[in-house]
Every structure is written in C-alpha cells, then in structure tokens.
Length: 70
Image (cartoon, rainbow, N blue to C red; front, side, top):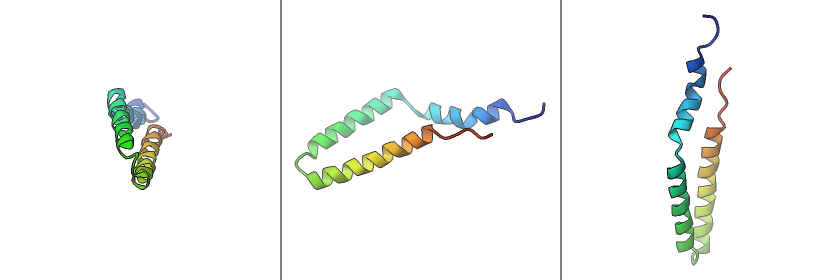
C-alpha cells in the first residue's frame, strides 16, 4: 500500500493525548493554587513560582499542539 501508514502518522498524537489526564490536571491546578496561597506573604517567591508554573503550562500546551508529520 503506497503512502504512510495511518498508525505511524497518528502515533505522536496518540502518545500525547494518552499522557494527559483531566484528573491529574485538576490535582496539579489545586496544588498550584494552594502553593500560591501559602506564598502570599512572600511576594518574591510567589512571583518566581508563578513564572515557573507559567513556563510549565506553556510547555504542556505546546506539546498538545505538536503537529502530526506529513
């Protein structure tokens, strides 16, 4: 059969979606909110934590938006 195998094309997407869990995302969000609340008296640390959290969320978003190969 000519052309790429359908399973070969969909494999990266299947891996990315299989690694993501709504339950784990909610748990991570709740933990981050609790950490930010605990850091409210330490603005410098809270700001650094927020920047790192933003970077991690951005990475996860980019991973979910990984294009499939042609």
